[in-house]
Length: 208
Image 1 (tube, rainbow, N blue to C red):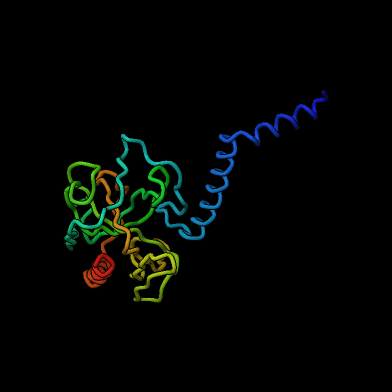
Image 2 (cartoon, rainbow, N blue to C red):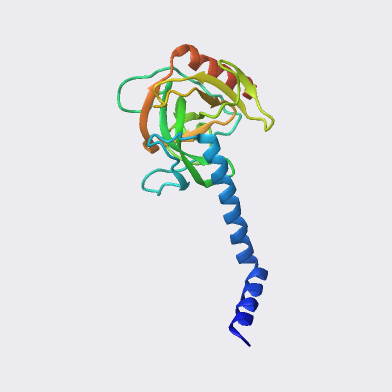
């Protein structure tokens, strides 16, 4: 059998292997997701690029599942210049994808509250932050709140010091993140009370 024939036979065997097929499929999905996120974030990272990939190590942070519905949430507005993330502040943290806790990227988030981990989930311990992800992708009109075709609710909060390019941002109000305080990369800025209250109203409306 010629070398070409042996190679062709090997390729056909690999193509029939379920593990190989799953690997190729996963690579394709990852490529599509990376392209989509590049359009979505448009440089949301504090370093001007997307920091995407596997979750941080266990020593660096603990990745928690999103906050479950049912337990009452008590948002507070209490930003302080104390070098720690407070409700009412926009900070940077690693946010996992909804469908995969092992994959995600760094992005700005608005802190809504701090609560005991057991209040909103079965994982984690001690105090956790409840936060909402931000995006610079234009999903609704200035100052408006809109639910898109996928059921995600977006609140436009305009621009602020959290984005070095001065782009307007929108907050996703229907997905409550739970973050270990130590997982926060850095503080970004504080949101004024009027915009914070508007976001809280949207969160309550979605959860009602």
